[in-house]
Length: 253
Image (cartoon, rainbow, N blue to C red; front, side, top):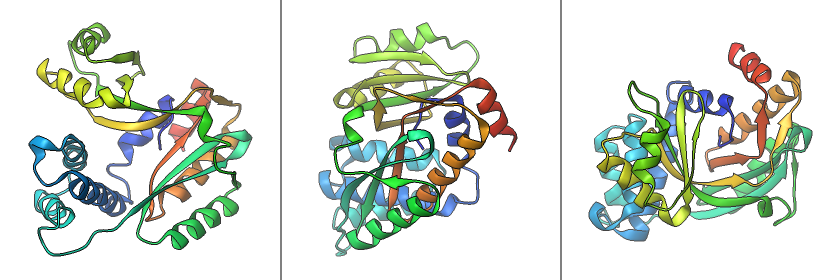
C-alpha cells in the first residue's frame, strides 16, 4: 500500500515476511513478465525490467524464478503473456481516495473482485477520473537509514537527476522525482554507494486526508488489505495521513 505515513513505511517492511509472501512473489513475477514483454530480456537496454528484477530480488524471490519470468515474458519459452493494466477508483472510510492498479488476464474477474472487496469492507467505487485527478505519477525511492547516512548525503547524490523532494520519514528517507527521472535518480544513488529499499513509479496524492481516530484507521487497513489480497491487484494508492498517536496504535495491533 502506498501512502505517506509512518504506518505505511512499517507495513511495507512487514509485508515482506507476512503470510502473503507467496502472493507477493506472484505479483513481482507478473511485473517482470510484463517488463520483459514490453522491452525485451536484455537488462542493459530495459530499465523497467531492471527495476522489476531488483524489486523481486529485494523481496527474496529466487533467481531461477526471476530468470524464468524474464524468458517467459520475452517470448523465449514459446508461451504467450497477455495482461491488461486497469485502474479502478474509489473511496474508503472518512472519504479517503483510492486508486487500485490491476494487472490481469481477465478484466471481468478483476472488476468483480475489486467491487466485492470494496463493498464488503466499507468502500465505494467511483466514476473514472473522479479520484485520479488528485494523484500525480512520480518516481518514489525509499532509502533505509544506516549509520553515517544523512538526508544531505541523499540529497547531494540525486541533486542533478531531477529530484523534487527528499524527506525524512523516521526509519527511511524518501526521494521523489518525476516518473521519467526515476531511473536517473536510482542510478545516481548507486553511483554514490547508497543502497535503496525500493524504487517505483507511484501515484502520489496532491491533497491528503488525516485519519482522526484508530477505529477509522483500522477500517481503512482492512479495506486496503482486502484489495491487496486480490491476485489481480498490483498496487493500492491512497491519500491518507496518520497522526503519530494513530500510527502507534496501529503498530500495536
